[in-house]
Length: 158
Image 1: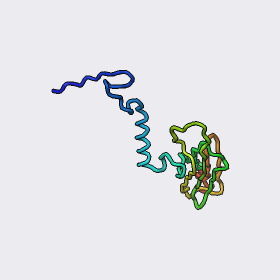
Image 2: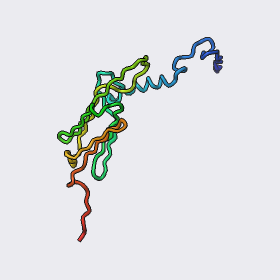
Image 3: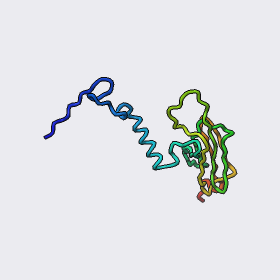
Image 4: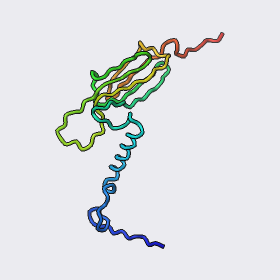
């Protein structure tokens, strides 16, 4: 039967005379590195981007009785740098966000900059002439109304 190995903790983050591994000193850094590698492997739409890569913003899509609502996260994007189009029953959103000037040393960058786009097919019952877009607090809200013919209506029984 083996005996447990005694561990003697020394001063300043060492085990006996050996230094403590870096991942014990910064446990969350190791988790962040693993997460970054998983993002790159699994879904190119979520990965941390380089300045030349296009990226896709986070989007919530909600259906109400009279419309479809799209909310896109676009923090730091100016209204003039956004384009919203409806073509052939598709919603196209594109834009660009620029890296800001920095005076200090950048140690980590996870915020996305550069060109981005979002594209989705709209249901056939939408009125592509009745689309509204609003940018507020870094969220682009797009409301695509359903056509009058497809809205539910109550039928009177005789």
